[in-house]
Image 1 (tube, rainbow, N blue to C red):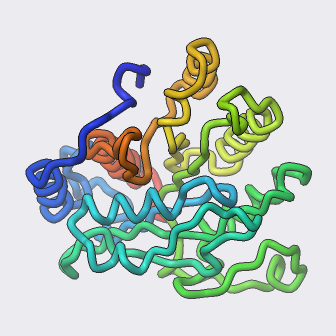
Image 2: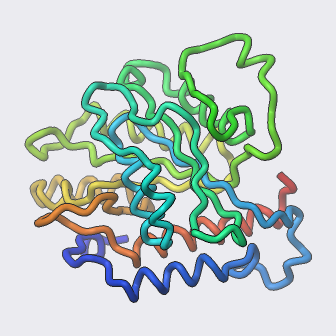
Length: 273
């Protein structure tokens, strides 16, 4: 995505939201990428999408806006959002949120506690190992999450088939400081995190999403272009509505979710779990 398509100034219309809601309500696994659905090795009609990121990255704001665009205002009210200003995550448990407001679809977006700021100074592979535990189903919906290392949990934890993840979305804020200048430390951290997650997840569908793109608009042109180039191939998105700032775009959220669903379909052509 180029920079001409990431700065939206208008609120999403009811018509745009209704179109997105209709797509999700009518969608069936295999509709996007698969000509013959009997070829799917995993034909489950349930999809769980994991959302992870550092504290204050905007994960919960992204999920809240996604649910609202999906027409599920009721579920969006259960999503707590904050700035993570205390260094602690506002989310403390794994939470599965049904995307639509109807039980006829089983597509879930799964919120997790943000990785603490200390991870900037820790081995990133430890954090990617936690992501792998989420993906493999070691953490259930509603379970309190701790990122402290536990030998018992690590080697004797139980896997649950109803908790495995089909895709991973990593949410990150632009690597800018308070004056919208490049924060080199954050930039290195995010680049390493993306590389390690790609390595850890292998062929599992993985999407790197840069949120709060209005911050990029406030940066100098050369800084903005550097970010766009470094994170080429990522999705640039706005997670929260604020007057006078860039607005969340239904078009971008639709692009992302179609990409996620399509990648899951391709993955299921080759994998049973």
